[in-house]
Length: 543
Image (tube, rainbow, N blue to C red):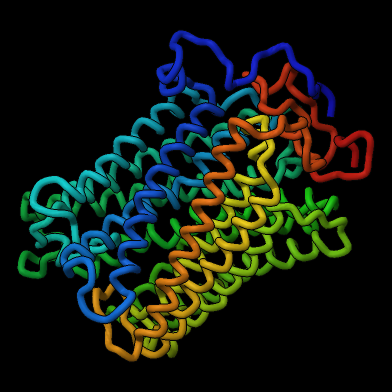
């Protein structure tokens, strides 16, 4: 690759001087790297709020009966915890932070296609996030419907459902704008010589994700508006007394929300795909298969929503069709896992924190995926639907997948983002505590779910206490690991050892520029002459 340099005349993006100084210089910046950090800081703040809500719920579930909160408070806390985690953290997290920061660099561009639209999407995101939290405290009481807003209850509840629905609707606009920006950026901004199959695999995952954001998000936005209209204008979309159908809501909600699972997980898959070749010092095994499988996951993911509704009432033909497609969508995910393991096979393994989190991602995601097949099977779904088994499966996919993928990306790209190294020993300890706490928290819920423990319940029968007690202990272990990890990263961002340009010996474009990156990423736009992930060669652009 030509045009790459580790020395640059431009200032770092952290030192840029524009029209505004200080905080205003950040919140009005159109630089994709600063916008990515704005997303990061916003997401971390709301993540900690949601973690506190989750920990309080686990304290309540330590023992049977009422301990620290009323059933209404528990339902409200559960709802806002879910809204924050799903709509504010999980869906935008990886795309908004690492996609914004590294997509232009990885494809050899100076910025995204629409920098001002990128900034607007963060402003919309911030407004929606604040609305979601305000719904917990304002007006007639916190929403208590659950984050899925199922009718008829969400159309009849006296709580602040409209505020929460509006928050989710606003957040959807941010997601659509980000997806649109990424699609145009990937189509129009790639460096000379960077054909589709010379593009790194993280941009491939962002591309597949962006199409889901653009095509699926409007559906849930319209659905949420329909609930608001039913509450305020008494239009009978879902109320049978007015000629509506409550099952229609479930179809419309899950037509978006199952593809949204892949909005959450595809970027995480892209992140770990960058990490495995770097810490194995080997090219990615099956590059084309991984790239195409991302598009296959995004495509098939549109057609499996019905497996959330096997017990809601649908024809036998529809049930077996959705069950069949649920098994089919597991195939491209399995292709990725095979290729990740093959990439590490006989590689020069360097077991640093990013790789530890990436390997943990495979382990936890496989547990989530295999238990997903239990839920996708008609016979077993009837037994474990709406039990704690689903809670465990969901968190192994989302937190074990997206969450650990996010932590992997943070530890992988931290030196590039801040120009500082973190304490690797402390990062390893935090990983061990976090991984242990995660499994103690969620794995017992598979067991009590199989025993019949329903999900979303404020109270439970005494025979489920052991599982809940272990889960609650795991929650405290998990939170300890999260706090230690965040402490290490915050401290290192200010006081860490100065990072070299390429501390992990990576081969993609971001590692060929200085740490932190220059203001416009490259002094000269690179010319790409070969595939990515080429190691043990003087010219990284040659195959």
